[in-house]
Image (cartoon, rainbow, N blue to C red):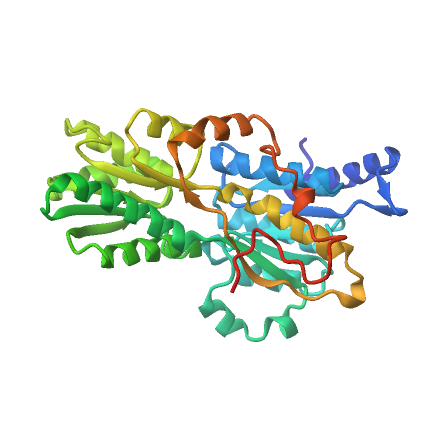
Length: 369
């Protein structure tokens, strides 16, 4: 592949893909299938982002849409390089789906000017501060048609609240020390989950938050942080984490002190990855919430319906929140594991579309205002 830059290779792939679609007669109403590029913020090795992409791809296939997933490894420069290729290259998609991790949204909006590519944000959308700086988005960036995020504040609250209840059941009225591990301080998802944790904390005066740190969503980083914090706060009884990888890192640090995760120190996390389900079953993880891996697939529902609308009648979708995340019930684990063997997780997203349904019908997965 010498002689080609990474960006030009992506463009070549899109060209080849277009030729193949044409040769295969994958046309609808005499037009090419709607094309979508998703800038996946995580690495291809991350089980959560793998499941996310699988479900999103299955949704695209159900709607006969073309989807290309590009993993960007939480590397801002890499993400913006791919965004520039998608928005300013020769072979542009109809839609670019991205996440505002590490506050990349303003630069993506700037790159999109004049591209003709519609933008849609998932998981993390523009922050209030970014909107205040950018001004009226409908005027400045009319191709930014909306966003879909999860109920992350609620997930932070539910996991923390359940963790505190479990701790109180065995503490016999005694105060409990808590350590908290958030993701990053510039990722809306992390900030929302942290806000939920603080909401639960306000309802439980018996729980004393000793320190909250930024684990960067990483197991290795949380492990190193926890080694220090557990020496500093040896009476730690509760650990709240914003994702499962950080929980596993802290569990390893707890085990190094001779204590047993899930018994001597209680844990909560967010994610339904296979390793998390195993940890719940073997007692290391006491509380977890999940379901947010479906956000990308549900975004495809919204884009499909937007595309199916008469262009003269299309309206920007605005910022929407999906009611997805909920606490795991142990009895659900066999069903979740069985569903995860299928790319579509047993969900036919076509049933969630509003195309052909009576006027006024609302999306069942969208949180009502």
